[in-house]
Length: 302
Image (cartoon, rainbow, N blue to C red; front, side, top):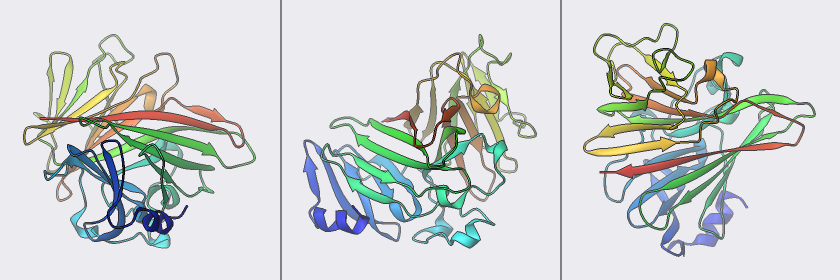
């Protein structure tokens, strides 16, 4: 079903199953967006750019960063292939990045996606097939009937007639948090309990170790990136008394991208004030037509 078809089926009043409602909304200049709400929190999907663009308490701040310069705009495929249109939000890329040239594949990163409202109140986003990576991403987004929990099932499907080998990489850009916390794994692969990416080491005072956690603050002048192989599998950002947690199961013994990282944090310098919370799956070899699903979880607390 196309996005327009779903819109017509929903109607102006939206549709509801249990305590979760699904309706079409206009968001930051984009029409025909989809909002999931349970009365406590809401999630907004913008299919025109293939992203989740809002997560927050109803009537409260958006925890996800939206690029103010690109509100309501769309990606031009030819331009996006040369220069990344950084809309913000939450999206999927194939991992590792070392196997593709910057910018990200425009088909996977910012091309329009179709949205289907499933009978169990979930949203299903279906992306376009990438001829470059040889895969298609599909996402099923489920909001808990009560509380703040969101479960996202990210599925990668091989669209080629040969085997492919990739990991699923979920990238969530959060709006200039006060601090991002990452659990250390002192018994893991990295001697310090975390991994520092080449030429992206934190300046003095930006990274502190507090108990069994690494606390990272955004530097205004330098990009920073660290990772971890923690079996706890979570990353937490804090801003204005709110904690936004993303998490996924880390499968010990499996091969992960980026020298073994299942969790990564990237901080962006001014003027674009955001930090990325990134979750990665193990590497997967898929036969033609085969699929693999990587499930992530979101939670918001005060």
